[in-house]
Length: 356
Ligand code: MRU
Image (cartoon, rainbow, N blue to C red; front, side):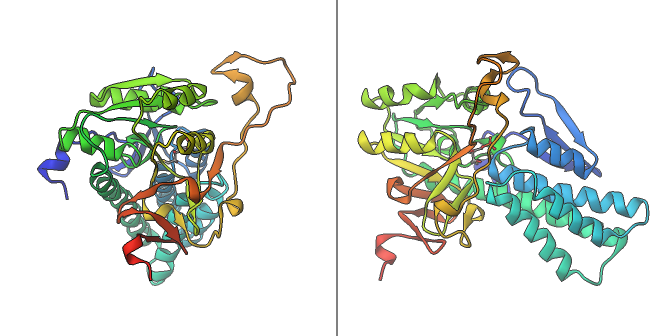
């Protein structure tokens, strides 16, 4: 449901369906170019997820749902086995990126949906899968609104926040997780806030995407290199840090973009509250601790180059983990679609008053 309050909020279309076609905004080209791609095959969706044309944990889940539908639609068009096409598309899309649990959550949801509709086949099944993919997208948008609403209560008028990577509109169905409380505080509650955005090497999601989004939304944003965060925190310029998550283990350890963990250590040292914002679909009760979260390693080129410019000797050894894990003890609280929780235990949000 869109209320007049929500209508004021900054949103971007990231991945969507319109009249039988699936589109996404190619995030690899931002902020220089706003190119919309039509995705016509499962292979194209796999590639878009792998090369980060669509990225951010919730958006990857939404893209996967539409990818499964594309498989169904294409199979129905040539009269082949729609159910088999959906299930094999789900298995294939699951190999695109390993860390964001939202991908697997969405694919499991599609598979369970197909099981529940075992009497449907052909075009009818394809049409049903589209409704489920659309539901994943609209529920994500609603989660973002709830994260924004809950998180904004923590933000005081006049404060400056810091964020890492991009957990904004581009990383979701259009409103964000870590940036949602900032959008809500500024655009619904009218609070004056400012944001420092970490650049986020190697792929610069902070400078290319977060700085772009916040600037478009009219929220004052200052870009810093990742290695400047320590001195910015030491200067007392930042009152609160909010980041997103790709997977939160059952004990509350959170995987997010590489560089999040050292930021949390700095935050603890400088006594700056450190929040993780994510929908409940990012909490993985089946993964006990952060040590069990699979961490994606990406191409050496991403580190040895900035864009297409080579910045290291050829054949240099490179280590390029895309994510790190922040232990639960460094996280002040989790801003979720169901409220703000001080702890996650057994995959459940807890606050002191609910302990017993
Ligand atoms: O590699 P990316 O750009 O997909 O990494 C994204 C992040 O680490 C985000 O912070 C995370 O997915 C949360 S998005 C709401």
